[in-house]
Length: 107
Image 1: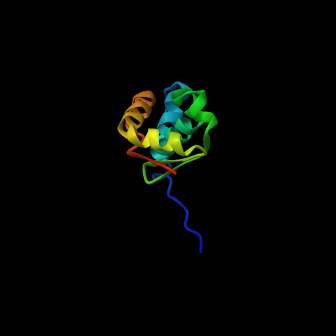
Image 2: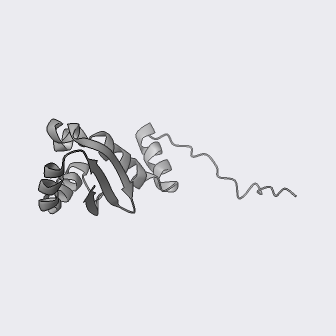
Image 3: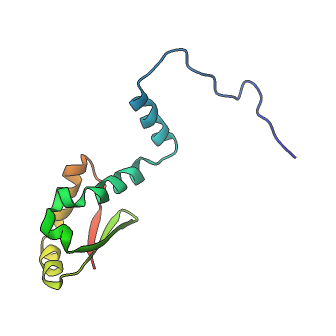
């Protein structure tokens, strides 16, 4: 059995025009994709934020529940970054413009 929306329930087009950027931002907010987009952006720009030496030793990056998991190939680097974990979180959030990373776990 199909249910169809009544004419009153169908969203009407707005008569005024708006910039495409505003439309995309509204779409991301409507579908609650802003957070995921920020996470993907941060992962893609990892080398820019942390520098090439750390990026070369990074094997894998992924987010889970606001935590950034970083798999490294160097145990000394992992220890060093664990010691300055709060600075890394602050650096990434400042670079993103708002809180994207709640915590960082170095694996």
